[in-house]
Amino acid sequence: MQGFNKYYPPDYDPSQGSKHALGDRARKLDQGILIVRFELPFNIWCGGCNNHIGMGVRYNAEKKKIGNYYSTPIFSFRCKCHLCDNWFEIQTDPKNTRYVVTSGARQKDEEWDPEENGGFAIHDPDKKGTPDDPLAALEKTSEAQANLTKVQIPRLEALQSVSEHYNADPYSLSLKVRRKFREEKKIDQQKRKADDDLKGRYGLPASLSLLEDDAEAKEEAKSAWAEARQKLQSQEGAKRRRIGGVDVVVTPSLSRPASGSSSASSKSSSLDTLRTRILSNTAKNGSTAQSRLSASSSKSILPIRKL
Ligand SMILES: [Zn+2]
Image (cartoon, protein in one colour):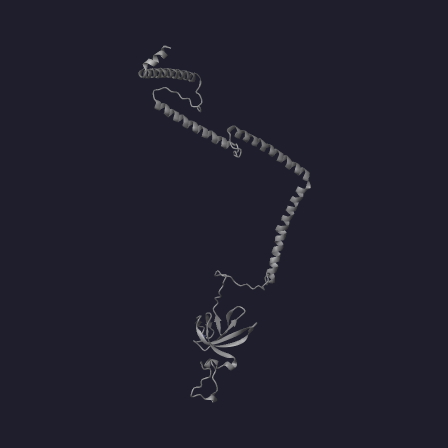
């Protein structure tokens, strides 16, 4: 079992009284002061020796409650400079959750600005939208007034006048609009009819949308036509050269017939050659067929020949 009685050492003298549990740090407790180890929360300059004292330097400070912010106690820490005999005091500031130097030193101004460092600042919700400065407020209202008179009112007036203009004579406006609509409709119908005719002629699907017929499209089609014709003619020329000495005139369907007598003569000559070729072919075929037949069965063929 754990002992829970107080231990009295052999040299205990009850007349001396009991010591505080915190020992020497509680020596000023009757003044409400407790001595604690305090670390500087920021850089300061000592008011006595004007030396810079860095953040994080520790002192044995006299901690004392000096007031309340609502229910939160405000403490002051009184420290003695380690370079001179000057004392400086730093207090807690619960309202702004920070420390402030109240006397004996200067705080180096290096406030952390959360908005500057990519964070979010906590804004006071009690603060009103209007600026505290009455002159600034006046300036703001006068700016708004100027905007109203220079921009908004003229715009409203212009809109009003336009509206009045259109509402003045609705009959004639309606007449105009309907006439225009009718004309456009007529043109549309004509266009659609022409398109349908074209589709019907070439067996195109009804859902196919045709391009608008303009000068550029016509020019393009013409050039494409000429190009295709050129190509065909060159192909035909090459073929003719390959055939060589045989005079075969192929009249391509696309090529326009050449003028007058030359075309007639070429036509007649081509017809003559065609006739002679057909005749020679039939003669050749006939002779070969006859020889083949006579070779296979000369007896059977004879009566037929007689007939
Ligand atoms: Zn100092």
